[in-house]
Image (cartoon, rainbow, N blue to C red; front, side, top):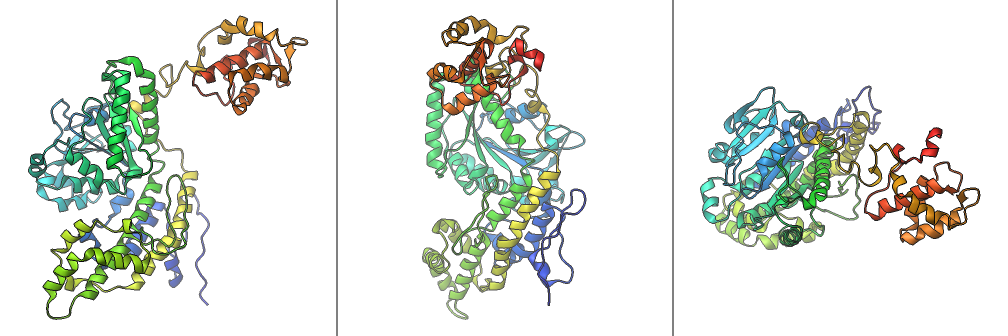
Length: 571
């Protein structure tokens, strides 16, 4: 009797292997040695046959290629003209790149993929789409009008060792620009959105209007909201009160366009290397920049997880209950889910089933296209699929107008079952491999450029503030306020120079901080761990209370410069 395949133990080094369910029907088990290889094979063997059988690529997304599974994380920058997209890239990599043009007028009129290369140079679009090492081959479908406005700027740069950045043309208002492009701008952005790891929408604090085309572009990014981050740039050019109004207006505008219950993350700042025009919000801008940098730096570490998640998106939409999910680092997918390709298969096979064999094909085709909404409802009822998971009705009707329905295929359950098996079993096993790879690989973050500018030294974020105040001082920083704290200390009935926890509590609770916070302060201040506080430890406790009340975080461990002088001999 044939034994079912079981998960194999990890092989030596950083290589992994496991037996897929398909291998149960083979004499030799199928081994996946990396997550990328596993995704590539699962797509080619289980999802791609379904896509090809029902002509998925003619209606939705082109087929994935090897480069899509192997490429570095990509960041897509989108915004209206003069919002600082190109300057933002220059700020990150701290280096000019080939083809870069910066100005107040619309300067970037091309899609520029800024990537790592041994020497500086430009690769034109027509050459890019025939290079199998680059993940851009399927962009050939958008024609010469687009390819003449597409290039790769390659240069040696440490930031680009880890990520690639896509600069896009600035978006103007008006129908004329849309017509003059010569290609479907929103469709190109949608193509990139499916393949990038992060989408950054840039807004100018001075020009907050969202044009019709920009609104259309944001709507085209639907289903990729998890990748979207928003930057409110040039925020140093307006006063604090006006900035608050602009921020509120931006959130209100985005809420009408990005239809999600969660509030999109907006980073406020001035992302270039020039002096701040209005420095009032300097600390806010520094904190926001650090948060954005941390988000971008995490992309290489989460690249395999993102590719896994995108493959699941391609193979998503509910089929039956009950559901179960794997909530891992912001990625969730459902067992028993149906792929976008599977829903597409139901639509195509339903249209095929309704077509006559001989006469009246054209008239029936028109009738079916016009009544496509009713077909959606029928499929929804029969297969328990959410109405929001179907492709756009209007777009599908437009695409069907040019199709020959007689070439459509009938429903083939075996293909659908194969994708179900992939979602229910193979993906879960790949998820384990992702974690195994992460555990054996060193921490991967983006390095170089602006990412190294504030890593260490006095210009690191928060240096010399909060618990870090006095880090470079010779004198104990708490000492300057100690006379005030001593007056309180001697009213708390010290015995042998120390007060009890009960007496200290009476004073500390006056800060109105939660007990959980005061408990941590007590733990930090009781340096000798005797359950009592002397005058220096009491002064330290009050200093830490002040740090917390000023809005700073408490340290996990007491920094050396905060240790009371009399206790330092014990360190």
